[in-house]
Image (cartoon, rainbow, N blue to C red; front, side, top):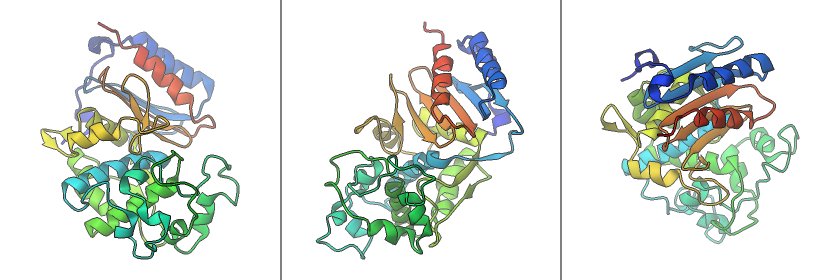
Length: 317
């Protein structure tokens, strides 16, 4: 079980990266007041860089916001391997008796939720989160978050069109909790976190005690790097298969709008978990690279530009 300070450490040049480029990224962050809190770089399984900015340090946990979605995806894959969930083709009607069989919502599958093609009316990216009428805010004002989602109207047939929806992710958390017979956080600790050395987590819950599927998880930056490395290693850690390799593969290809199963899909086989205010886990199988950013940014997409510079520092042979 690796702790970060036990990971093999070396300099960038020894792992085929241009150290001056990485230093340039660090200098830009420090001089630009971008509110980036941390940056970690793993290359070939080695810790190349671990830099903390402002008042952050290695022990401080970050709210990773929507990177939580990628954790939920991993847990779905583990639950299927555990035979707690039969398949991603199971429908909502199998988990929620309160949905009428004649309701189009009853035909939504786990696959639809994973790929954010549920068809539920959830205009998340069209309304500012600061708006009190945003469905995310209305959901949390309700007395029962899952019931609020299940009472939303359908605006499309399931599986037809991508629509970014934290509601889809929270339904996945509820499905997990009903399927595994224990709280999702406890299941995550047992099946995912402890096996890869993540020992310090906070996970916010809804009013029914269900960990929020689309946000609300707090992790240390190093633990975000662990999770990224686990995926880079096709779900394997210390010769133990934590997540089925086929699940890692299926989760990280695009099913529409550059989105997989709760992962964003980049170019050249890259994929990443992305959360509000600049939380990122980037994974590049082609260059054997994992990069983590955390922050409190007004420009959520700025770390993508920094990651591109870092990835381009890998010396192509």
